[in-house]
Image 1 (cartoon, rainbow, N blue to C red):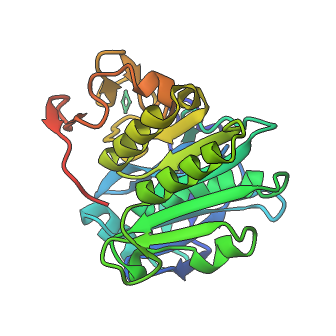
Image 2: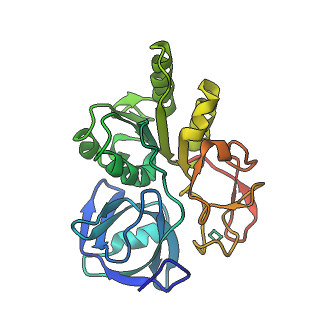
Image 3: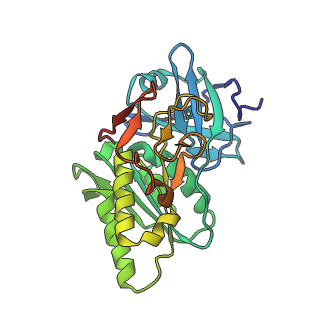
Length: 286
Ligand code: FES
């Protein structure tokens, strides 16, 4: 069944569950008809509960499965975390425009909290072909860091950060990104990097502002996923995810946007939208 339009959800059984941390589990499904490009998302439906956007995370076409990593942050995610192997959920998608792999450039991944889920999807694509991968990943505390052992199998250049200092660098991922880029500039070379980011919108705004302050030309090579935004229909119809004053929808034109586009919006990092379409100030969270 094609679910790429407005289609009804595909109903799929959960075939495996991995408890990544106290708050995050990865749910595995048969991937037939559901394989996503890095950075795309699905609408996950729990009958009689709700339907919510969930980022594509693990896509294994060879072995025929997908994995969605979901952190417990509210009623919907609490409900899904109660589900067991063999339970069924509805999945629409994949939707949206994902990350664009810029060939010939080195990669920096920067993630905050569960924003690591879509970052893993682009990391998995690039790890097959790229030598230099830099990952900077922050969370509130050690027990919120997901896939810690996974990334270090593919690159030595991983920096974990925690707000409380319980693991890795005690501070923000943006501190590490600033140091890294400034060191590269001191070496005298061109900043031949693509930067892929996801996390809360305030976090992404801090990333964007930092990059703009260091080298404006890097904005075109910066791709940030706004998967954290409220989305209701997922297909560009309801208007609940429109970003002022561009008229772009996060679900159809994004959720990944270049830094160049985001720098021109008036809402990014300041206002999000409520379910009724009204705007409200974005609150800090991981
Ligand atoms: S979620 Fe409906 S327009 Fe984007």
